[in-house]
Length: 260
Image (cartoon, rainbow, N blue to C red; front, side):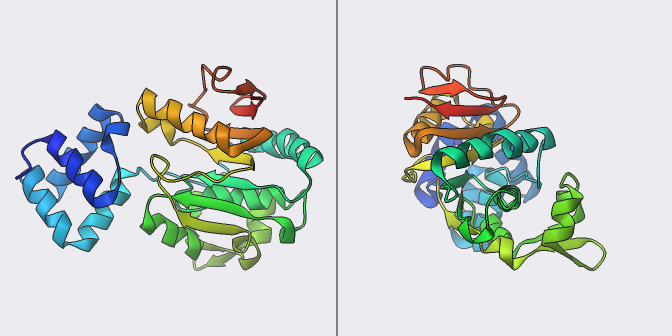
């Protein structure tokens, strides 16, 4: 019998591999309590029993838990910085075959945006982006590459016109040539191995949901994953205050360069 939130956290770890201790507790507990109430269960015990027998309920739970909010070209000014300053510098240092990782990629908006921006600098045949997320459902949607008009609202017309096909009145499908540039894989930032030798890691608007301890561990692991001189691109609410002690130097706003 699962009596309280502490026991429920252990249940979730055993059944999904997600460690809720790494998330900000008040915020996460409130989200879970809301979900339990919405599904009309009377508490953690009845809800956990349902999760073990109902696959669609479990998928909904993981999807809700991992807080998937994404859109193409989110915060356009930062993408311009990436295009005009960061990518030219990385290409001049490391060549055209950059190793790029989009961590916690959600529905694919971010890695596809990366591919489109990079395609202005190098041939599509040289672009390979690893995109990872913990949630099978969003990875499936990312591989499909079909998006509502709202997801594309910030995307420049040059990309929209070149790389998307309109499907009916409300949906757009990303082109196969861009899809081929991105490899989607399931991965848990809190427990799985990180790729090595990355020239650019993009992880935006994700670590804000983690505890300070989990954040520090993730930033350390990102540093270990980066090639010396490589760059970490974070969200516009995620300045790394102690970046120097973690081995980064401040490059541009929300871009951090590995220096040790």
